[in-house]
Image (tube, rainbow, N blue to C red; front, side):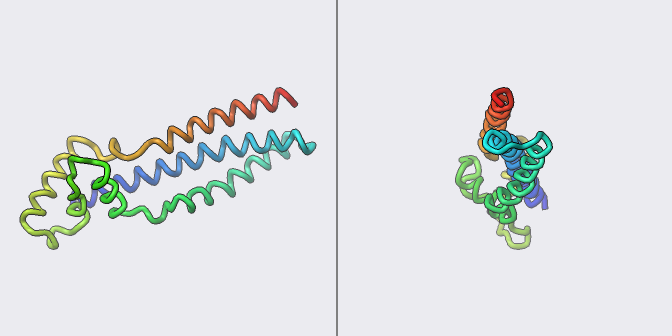
Length: 152
C-alpha cells in the first residue's frame, strides 16, 4: 500500500504545480492585457480590473483543461519515473499494482523502490520547469503592466 501512497503524493504534487503555473501565468497576463487594452480603449481603473479578473477567471480553467490535469494518475507518474529516473530502471509500475498481483521479484523490487523514495522524496524528481517559466512570465507581465501604467 505504501507504493500507491508514494505515487498519490506525486499526483498531488504534480497537480499543485500545474495549478500554480496556471495561476501565475494568468494573473500576469490578465493584468498585462487589461493594461494594454486600456491604451486603445478608454477604460477606467475599475474596467481594467474587471477585464483582468475576467481573463484570469476564464483562462485558468482553459489552461488546466488543456494541460490535461484530470488525466494525471498513478500510471502517469510511474511512466514519467520510468523515462526520467535511472534508479527506477523501468520498474515503477510495481508501485501501482496491488501486492496480490506481484510475484516475488516484483515484491522485492517494490520494497527497494519504497526505500529509495523514503530516502529521496518523489517530489524532488518531478518537473519544476513550468513553475519557473510561470514565475518568469508573471514577473515580466507585471513589469510590463507597470510600464504601461506609467506610459498612460
